[in-house]
Length: 303
Image (tube, rainbow, N blue to C red; front, top):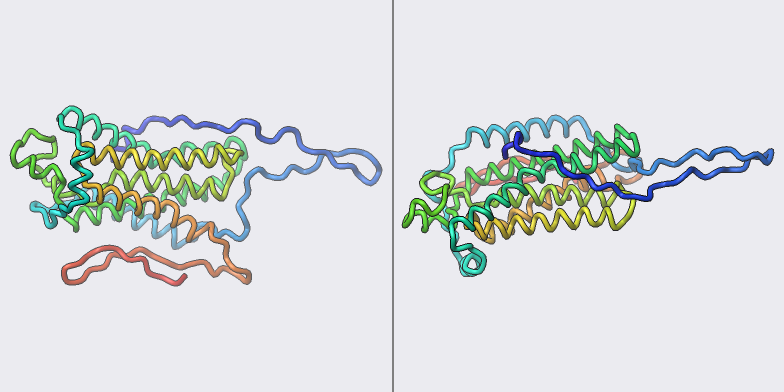
């Protein structure tokens, strides 16, 4: 992901927000302005970002960036992973021409580059401009950062450990000019589809925030924001198969894990109402695990 190439997004603001505040009648028969209720408010039953989450976000995000900058991908594929399902979808969607495949790959690059900043630029500025609520904006900002850090960690860990050959690997062996990835170790980084996982995370974040907070002021606008990002995730998944960079199962896994991370972490750690009687929110963490012949990630803690 090249952050410097990210351009500003267009934020669509909902129209028809609250008009003038209602007026109340005092005991003396005089009218006086009623105290306006905030348009958005953090539910007192929701858990705010806690110190261990700040620390965890820094550690996980830093580890993800380190792996991305210094990763050494497998020189040989550890897993070919061909199966009737993937082969059939590839036959249906793969674009025959190199130019066509590159256009599909470039389209998916655009979605990946923009997606992590959708909620930052489409939600936080709206809350600041309309509601002037810095504390709520900060909670949204940190939830987004936390989910993106975990999603990046999952993606980079699996790239290093799975070693699945991309569908274009066989074509590269026959024609080194088949794709720009031919001849490099990136040809063995098919699982998961990092593009789809990244966009799916943004979709999950958009959907969970707009489910619990009417940021755009109307159900159609808030629901539409979620729907647009889900469509972007599906478009990215299809484009990755059309460009012959990933198998269908790579993109399905990426979409599921990405959306689950984007929606699930804020819900699990914040939006899920705590029970009466104090803070009994979940205490969880994502940790790597390893055993003979298997490596991966595990979520551990007390729910």
